[in-house]
Image (cartoon, rainbow, N blue to C red; front, side, top):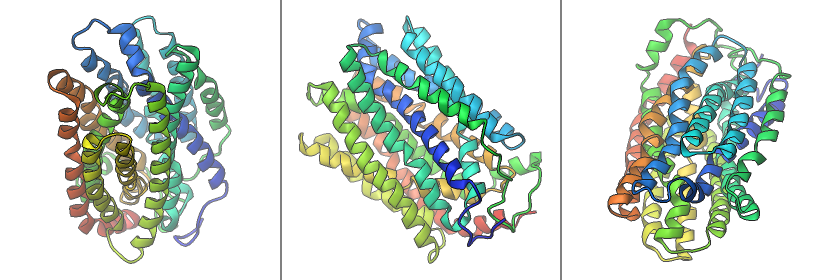
Length: 420
């Protein structure tokens, strides 16, 4: 075992690499759907007056099963081998993704997206807890950022792959087939990985089995609660807007080439999101040494800067609007490493998987499970600028919650590390 000055446990980088690859395909799958949504809508909903609202439910169907089953998998991950859970989950969502391409009707497609959600729910709570057990608290923010850089990279690849493959084959179904085989290979590798001991990266933390009261105490943990609420507000905004961006640019802003839009948007997302995610983790780790509550402070100020760029993107003409979108994405992703690292740091290893699971449940139930169909419904009755403006106000709320929560973070970290 190591103390806080020790960087990692044996095999940590191999485990991080595998988890990063899985997370990459996780987000590729999610955003392939967004990239080909206009073609799906034309296939199944071409004469439906509520087509946009119904298409938004494709994202929500995934999120509903994802968030509702996450607590079950979080409890399992606190009690059984997490690599087994991850392997089975990745296999399920890979097969379900292929099933999305085979869907003969909108209802079947909706069902396959529900299965993808169940698969990803098994992976979501387990992966960050393994990283927390393999890397000490002084470098954990940076390592979490490496893991979460799969969000912008995978999202960008999803947009680009979805647009390029569907254009090449003239078929929106093809991209879903492409991701299935690599997913199954990654699932198989999970069953070969050794299970790390819970809490081993922090020698002073006493390992123990979680009891019912431990889960109840999560709600009383101020940093956990405020962090979850802030992540919910951010997810509400970014989840809803990102789902509709290709359609918004193509149809509302009259940029005709959807394939090119997906490629440009993907390139911006991967560049801005990747740099911001990595830099956010590094800045959070360094500022933490001098400032209590640094992870929340960094996240809160990043949201404040992101908001005006979101507004500018809606009104600045193209091609200049692409620059506004770049900076909006950059500052929105800056919080990813710090906020998730704080989530791990303020919870005891015995309940950490459930903490991540409950976080998943809340941020999606009150976040991006609501915003895609809400944007679609508002756009059906008004226009997409009004819809985007309404949803983006949540970025301000996220900033306020993180800045307010910074005063509690150091105390809650110490409590988690010293609890019996």
